[in-house]
Length: 123
Image (cartoon, rainbow, N blue to C red):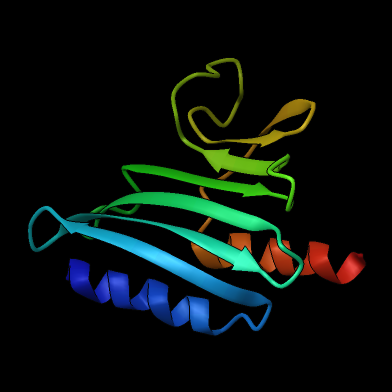
């Protein structure tokens, strides 16, 4: 089951023509649990570093981080569920922006890639 999830992630990456290159790391803990992380480089030189710790028997990711930055490695946004902002109503889910922290729901990798695609089309 976890291997199917990893394949799903790779299939999503193939859906986005703005992706120039990517590298993935996968770790299988058991049939249901694993970790996938990666670096995705986009046509404009921006980059998404991500990590997901998955239990395919759960409705939510155990841990996630989607860190999007420009080609100078300056933060554009980061979604994560690290428990370090208890004041946020959506705790532990939140979104970092360059000058603020916002409430957030847990995004999927596809959600994040769609957001990046929209941002790249605006420029």
